[in-house]
Every structure is written in C-alpha cells, then in structure tokens.
Length: 387
Image (cartoon, rainbow, N blue to C red; front, side):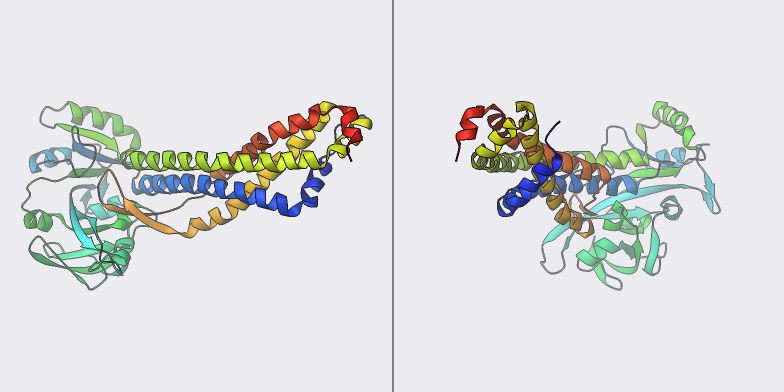
C-alpha cells in the first residue's frame, strides 16, 4: 500500500515557515508567468473584439495596416457597388474611411503619444454594433466636430467632452464621447472623413468597410475584387484583420514573459530543491522507519514527489491570487501595427489558470525530483541508525 497523501500534506504543515517561503518564491514566478499570458490575451481579445465576422475590410494590395493603405474614390465606388453588400434602412452598409495619426499630450504627464483619428461616413456607425454614444452627441457632417472614445478622452488632453483639439491648421471640437466596449475603437477619435481629408490635403481613403448579406459570401466577394484589374486590393474578414494586428506585439509580450519566467523559474526550482533536501536531511530516521514498516523505495520516492508537487501547487495558487486582480487594470501601449496608442485590459481565462497551476506544479516537481531520489536511495540500515 502506498504512503497516504496526508503524510506529505502534514509534513508541509509541520514546517509552515519553510514551506511558505518556498511557495512564495514560486508564487512570484507564477505571477510573472500568468501576467505575461494575461497581457498577451488582453491585447489579442481587444483587437479581435474590434472586428465582426460578417464585416469585410478592403485594403490596398500589399498593405498590412490601414495606415499604409490608399484607395481612391473610383476604386471605393466600385467596391461599394458589389451585390454581396448588405443594405440598411438608409442604404448599403459600406463606408470609405481614412486613418490619420496625430500627436497629443497625455493628461497629467504632458508626454506626447500617437492617437488614431478615423474619418468615417454615416454607414460607419451601423457597421460597428459595439459603438454606442455615451455622452454628448454625434458630430455633424461637414463640420469640424469630433467624437472620442472614452479611453482616449480620459488619457489625452483636449479629447474630453467640450474640449478642443488643434491640428491640420484647424480647431476641432469634441462634441461627444462613445463607448466601444472592450475594442480598439475606444482608443480612437472619429470625425467626418471628407473634412479630415480636406484638412490633411489627402485624396485617397485608407480602407473600405462593408457588411455582407451572408457571411458565407465572403469568398466570392474576395475572389471577384482581388481579380479585378481596376482594383489592386486585398479583402479580409474584419475579425481576422484585427487579430493579425495584435500578433507581433502579443508574440513579443509572450516571449519576453517566458524569458523572465524562465530566469525566475530557475531560482524558484533551486529554492524548492534546497527546501526538499533539507526535508530529507531532517527526516532520515523517519525514512528508515517507513522502510522498516514495509514501504518500498518507490513509495518513498512518490511521497516526496507528492510533497514537492503540493508545494508547487500552493505556489501556483498564491501566484494566481494577485494575478487575478490585474483583471481590473487597464493599461495602454503602442500598437506596433498602427503606431497609435491602444488601451486594453489584462484577461484571465480558464486556460491561463490551468497553465499557471501546471507551471507551479512542474516547478515543484522539478525541484523535488533529486531530493526524492536521494530519499528513496538511502540505505535502510544507515537510515535506521540516524539520530
């Protein structure tokens, strides 16, 4: 019969301070591990939520982002006449939009950062179901009025309701704030596309956004537009387009987090190993007694591995507790795809919880392997003679 699980559990309780300090060391590593995954997942979810599966984005061929793209008015007209486009109460659900980056100082610090200005058309609003007016009113067409996402209004000077922005040799008034939920639109400022193009002396749009009557019609639309010699364009589903925008930065965050976790993890494993070696050294006589009672070397090995695993799981739980609080924290960074500032939140998912607990368990197991082997290999007579 194997050694009861309670044996390993009670040994950890008998040495509370040592066990707690070791578990806290592993908890710090699990916290860093979970935070990196949560940061990457939060960025990915924010940008994925920005797109809709039944929307399509048309960009110039070879462009990776809207900032790099240019579509002239003739091309935009051809795109807007496709039969797959859904119709709303006020006409086809298709909008030609322009993306412009401006530099604004942050509130409190005055540090400048890029902010995305999106020139939109009336159809842009029904195309983005998640965008709702939160305060003030929508801008009037043909005017120098803007509406700002709630995140950008809180972070940047001049972007609040009733405030004024000065760019492109014009004064622009923010007449409304919109709630875009957990999407990238919350970090944007919207205005009349025609006024913005005139102000910046541009003649081409950045992209064309359209709603499909049937999401399954995407392949036919994509094939027709991309094969039209008049249209050097690429067509992508909106949700896939925004997900690709997060890939580079999310991968960088994930890799950086794994490197830091690896460095800290090595120290935590060594700490667990020292703790378990101390446990073995202090319990040689106890190990001899267990062997004399008939427990095999394998039973001893498993008992110490279980003890180390419980230590690792405790570290995982302790690390996840503060990591879960990050779920309520919003931060901002530069989106490497658009070079504009993007606000997003940490996201703790069931998969991240399981990965973090598994990582803590693995650290404990690795740290306890060599001490467990030493305990299992102790000669019986030598163990019984120990004081």
